[in-house]
Amino acid sequence: MFGVGVQDFPGALGVTETVMNTTLLKVGRSGFQGTGLVHRQVLGAAVIARGNAAAAANGSDMLQKQRARRPTSPHLAIYKRQLTAVMSALNRITGVALSGPLYLFAIAYLTQKLHGIPLDSATIASAFGSLPTGVKAVCKTLVALPFTFHSFNGVRHLFWDLGYGLSLKGVYATGYTVLGVSTATALALAFI
Image (cartoon, rainbow, N blue to C red; front, side):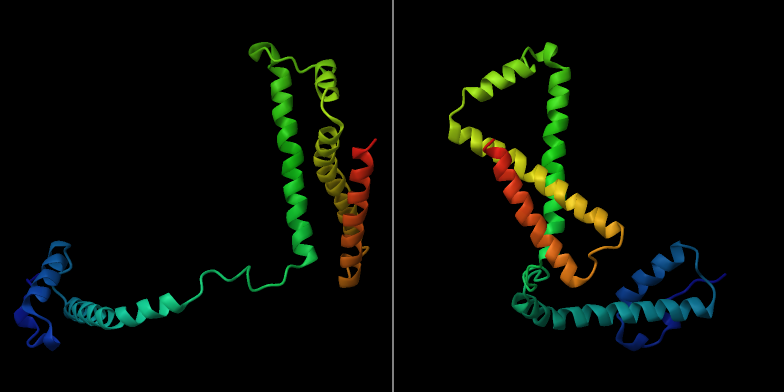
């Protein structure tokens, strides 16, 4: 084993002695001393590091100008809204809108003795019955619309699983049908 020094690289393609000594010292401490291959790798790494630093300094301004002109995340803004994408998102949203409050109410119902709020059906019915008619209709619609949409869209997906309505025309026809039927059913349930 022998030490590696700057004298082994005369001229070093313009690499300063400080860069070479620092690079060689790091290589020497890690135990990679002694072969000509390591000498060439260290020299190459030092030259590349110097070249990358110079290129970064020269191209930094140009890069900043390009980034300033570049639009930010146009991936959703450049597309026309499609019924299939909207229906898919609404199906997920209505699923969460239905299941979240159900779980919260179930936990509250099971722990009603701990927090002292009565959640039996008679108390809830009398509280809801005391609301004005317009507020009742809005509340019932807000509960019925996600339920009817999620239910009818689930039936639509079951038909897809059986292989029916998978053409582009069929997908759009069933999508508009689900929107119309679920809205009509929700309004009918809200005014019962």
